[in-house]
Length: 261
Image 1 (tube, rainbow, N blue to C red):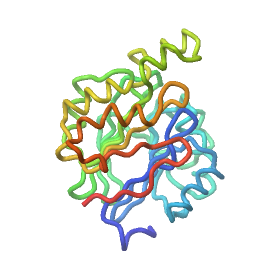
Image 2: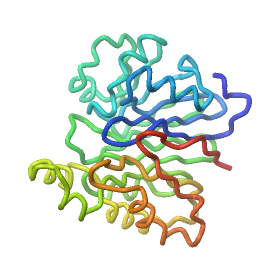
Image 3: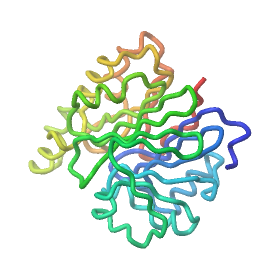
């Protein structure tokens, strides 16, 4: 893997939002992508901006089967012979059958890829068998927590003690209520099996505290029902003035590589 000689632990986002999500985690021995909801040409171009070739990927992990998380997976995996890890429900719901190397994972059953220990955590979302991930690389614990409609005691416990956290800030409650979505879609987004609002993300982050967190990445912002400045303003009071730790992963640019010390 091309980054192995220079990387301790790094994280990046190719983009995050309702039109496509993809996250990168690099350790000394591995480079993984979590989801690929971008088309293959877009995904590879964004990887090139970060100095990554697609054939450097050791694996693609899937959280669930919605299009903004799997759109580019089949093409990327087949062209570059990348193994894909996901639940049985994601396989059945995502029509992923052309992938020849699909490795089934079980929610709440940890597995490893090189020096990465990966824990798939069950979350409440309107998909077949959705999970999010806690990834441990040496001394660093990285949480990926998007696409959930509400916070459960299980989630509070399982994502405790992270050094970096990708946290869903999907919508502003007022923008969703007054926005262009039809009522049925508003109810779905704001419901218990939809997406987290800025206020819910703030409450969850306040529960954990931010002392240990080196990087907090506000993710999966809706382009119709949120603004980067609203997500930033919601979480900023929890940072004790260390606002440089908070990053907003946008749909078009994601975030550049961030290093964990």
